Length: 216
Image (cartoon, rainbow, N blue to C red; front, side, top):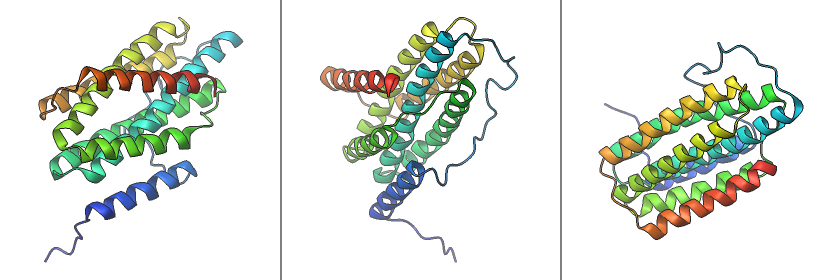
């Protein structure tokens, strides 16, 4: 007899909030599954201005991964289909790798994480739940559009990085490849088309977040 308990939607929601609180407090974070992309890249010399710019960009990317973890967790918690919930959890595992990589690169650069990470994470969790409640196909569409915008954002950062910051570049290139795959998976699994207004609001929200995170 299978004694494994099947969690209700409310159980999953409570679990997600518990995980978010633990993460915000610095407890319970899991290690990366995949190796650090910059692990074999020779450590470069960056002058103070280059180091400051790279650290600011990686702080923004770290915030993005905090948001991605919370977003996927919120969507998985309320997904109607177990298959969609599992897809969200699998993507979240890769986003956890990204989160750890960004944090490691921040430490190497002598940078700091955003002081508003609990705010970014909490807001993204609520957005993820709202997207999930709207239906699995719209939830998948939200993931597709989010990842498309993230790829554009990462391409912009790859252009802005100091030319000789090859370690940060390795990290961002792997992240971009993963995000593109997440978008394609969501599309293949039945994502519907979001309205232009929704896409615009998502862009505006992301712009506000990245602008603030660059400084704070």
